[in-house]
Length: 249
Ligand code: 6PG
Image (cartoon, rainbow, N blue to C red; front, side, top):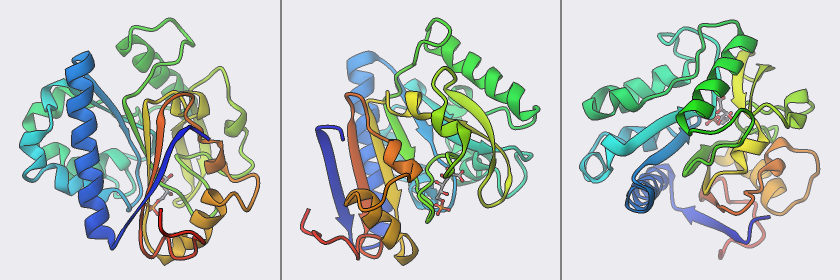
């Protein structure tokens, strides 16, 4: 595990979203002051939606350097953007449509293409954006992740060959809820990030959170997340942290 590892426990989902938004803004300002650009990859599902909504509100909306912020996705369901299952569609509704400055800097996954082609296309887009050679791994400033009760993260599901992808950093998979074709980042690009923030809320996540943080179970996809040199933070609400033996972190 990364030497920069921390677990933060907030009283509830509202407070967790506020802390996550603060962290997003802090990372953005630090990245822009150090490198002139902030690259972030978002996850889907319901957990980050409170954070996403806050980004369109004060103090975040004016505190984030949106002109220099480039938004990508960790994973996407291959459904039309208007479909309620679309991660990009949800993020548009929650904040992207409310921040005009950011429109040109949004890089949705190509969910409309045949999945394998979409994966290649997004890998190509990211490689070009970061000015890398083919198969050189780009480094994101911030990657936001969620977890499922089965230990999946991004769209890396238990037993899926995507867990072993090394050359491709975007792949097509099928699974999850909804059980549809998806595009997902793989470990090499996720673990290359400068900062990874896991968000988990609610009592349904308590058992998997304990299994992951206290390393009680092997073979859970989220256990493959070990930033190479970046920082890893687990941001939990009290319910998701309820089964941790040590809650004083
Ligand atoms: C996606 C994801 C996925 C998600 C978890 C948690 O399905 O698009 O990115 O990894 O983060 O399934 O989802 P919930 O927040 O809905 O529990």
